[in-house]
Length: 131
Image (tube, rainbow, N blue to C red; front, side, top):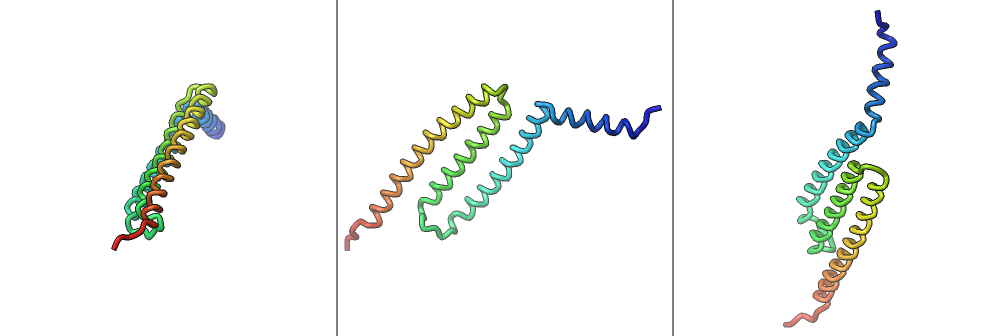
């Protein structure tokens, strides 16, 4: 007859080993990432809903900033997704390198676009008004 007290720890160890397997860890990470994506989507939805009523000094630029922020966060979640699915360290390093290069290009474009729109807004604010 089997001893229930000794079976319990064996069962726990087997479950623990399965959870700590690479596939178990990937599954856990993917599930947590899905939860984070949902929470993030809910946050951005709430933020976008309340954006028009916010009294921000950047006024018309608020939507542009919001869109940039949302794109950057989404890119980071996509990076996490790719890293979870990576095959090995070499693959992970390649994914991170590509992400870094893409982010540098994206940030350069975003800074240029924001600079241009800010300059237009400032030019319009200081333009002489015709009577």
